[in-house]
Amino acid sequence: MTHSDEVKIMLLGKGGDGKSNTGNTIFREKIFTVVSSASSTSAACEVGTKIVNGKTLTVIDTPGLFGSNLPDDRLKQVIQNRITESSSGIHAFIIVLRVGTYTDQEANIIEKVMEMFGKDILQFTVVLFTHGDQLDDDQTIEDFVEKNSVLKELVKKCGGRCHVLDNKYWNQKKEGYRSNRVQVERLLNTIDRMVRENGGACYIKDMLPTEEERQEEKENFRNRLGPLLRRTVLPVLKGLWDILQWILRLLSGIWRP
Picture 1: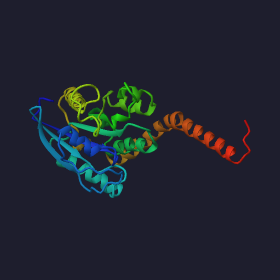
Picture 2 (picture 1 turned 45 degrees about the vertical axis):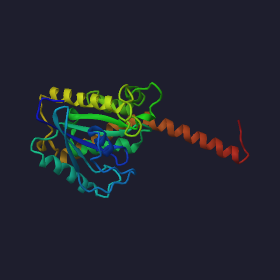
Picture 3 (picture 1 turned 180 degrees about the vertical axis):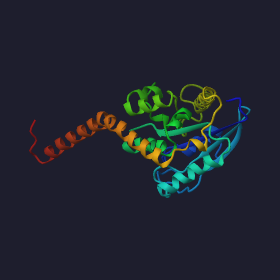
Picture 4 (picture 1 turned 30 degrees about the vertical axis):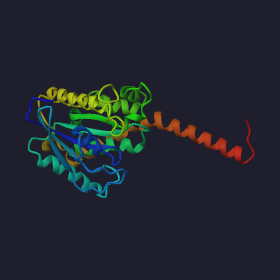
């Protein structure tokens, strides 16, 4: 952990992807309310503080960026207010994503984060994947990211900082890659190194973008995202469409090889 007296971490992500459970895994006890579905009933941030490795660690769990009962404007206000109320700022943001199929909604999570906080957030950000049990045998999270150009670009922008947990199956193992104890230690070490590289600086309220800057970043993100999605998602959809057409022809009895 860092040499500062307190390290503040904010969890960001979609409801149901293991964001709240991640906070519990870091603390090794149930502090945050876990919702199993993508629909989030929380209208406020939850905060937990605990001494970890001799340092005071504060974790802020935010409402889900999708599926929340809050309108987008209110959701943004709730999260930004938490930053404004924190006089010392936030040392690290953790964007929580789920190992599995990367869809437009996951891409929109990144868009929402950039819209809320601006591009300055990236120097304070770590990407964390949950449901690590979905990785193939002997596959690392770096291997998984390497196969998807959108994820690869995101992790690159975050300084190559990415980790993986499994909040269900990896809790019992004490050592090895598929151990939450090992992965949490690696995650905290990465945050420690990131804070040092940032000179101990935090993301503070003065870094929050203006409305004009948010709109500009939103447009820039869409312009960058379009070509990537066309190269990755569209070929998959075309393949699925071809398979569906083949099945329909087969069922109708007019199959032509």
